[in-house]
Amino acid sequence: MIAILQVGHDGFRRGPRLQSYPEPDKIIFLPMTANRPQIEDPALQPIAEKVFAGERLNFEEGVALFKSSDLLALGYLAHHVREKLHGKRTYFNVNRHINPTNVCVASCKLCAFGRKPDAPGAYTMALEEAYRIAGENWSEAVTEFHIVGGLHPDLPFQYYLDLLRGLKERFPGVHLKAFTAVEIGYYAHMTRRPVREILRQMKDAGLDSLPGGGAEIFAPRVRRVICDHKIGAYTWLKVHRLAHELGMHSNATMLYGHIESDEDRVDHLLQLRKLQDETHGFQTFIPLAFHPANTELGKLVPHTETTGFMDLKNVAVARLLLDNFPHIKAYWIMMTPRVAQIALRFGADDIDGTVVEEKIYHDAGARTPQSLTRQELIRLIREAGCEPFERDTLYHPVTRTETTVTVHV
Ligand code: SF4
Image (cartoon, rainbow, N blue to C red):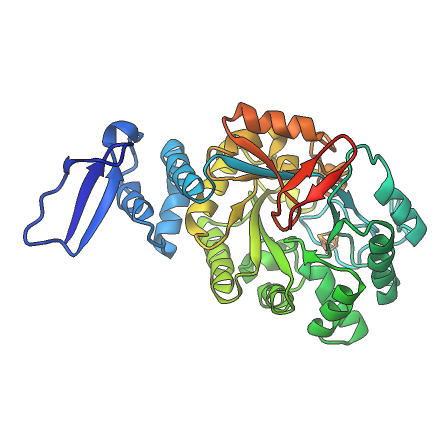
């Protein structure tokens, strides 16, 4: 027997909404109805009760969330969870993206970035060039380099170790979040060494954590179409599990808005949740909107790009299903600063960083700017009624004066 009691914002009980006899074995306190939006979709009502009771949602409930078009109710529920975890605190960082090469042996249909070695626009940075670019536009001292690239057929593994070592020597205070699980899996394949050994060597060379890219959608049926040259879900999850075992944190992503179903998205999120239950090594989940321009996959998708409705729904559902992920990010590069700002009230607690130079999604037609300043990020957050909180990659607080940057570990 469950009794549901209503409480006001002051915490005082306002009286039972449902009288229960005999004694209930569980009591759920719901905020006053007057303070809650009307939930139009009846399928969301029992889910809302579980969310307010802090209970884990299952596969069927995840599908019901994706199938619902009651976006305001989804947003309200996700914001409730976000506020319970973080209050109004909203994280951002000052970071720089570095893409050392766009040369790639794979030909993923979802991709507009990768090139064959002799294709127009193919490039590979010499190490000195990568170091120079890392230090360019150093107007606001960055605390993170985010480094990802293609699967180059000829670059030796030593190149990546030297890249990490060289960056660490030149920028010792900057966190190196580098190489997706797909890249790590490729280095293991190229060198015929175990993934654990590859990760260990990279960690010794300066690797601090892994980004979340390359996860796309785990369902093999979808993966075969959108990225059949990439590692599968098993290996993606294995790389992250091993990284966590070696003491590194990582992020996770999901590419939505192409040929995947609601069920595929829920399956993807629940596989991430399961690994997180084991390792607790993930920090942040980042839903990524598919950008179809200049991609083969774009020709198979019936729409041009994702809508704001779909973007906000993916943020909200992720917040509701991933109850063991500390952070959900609204990645402004892909969903635009406008939608990312609204997402801060739909479950997201992080708006990513300054980025400085973004190539991957701009090759796929992203019309967002390539960078935002620290002040612009702060404005977006404040305008949404939230409190800006500058973090480093591991969510330590960062404070600045005109001449200093301090990470409070
Ligand atoms: S998505 Fe990554 S692995 Fe696939 S083609 Fe593009 S760069 Fe290569």
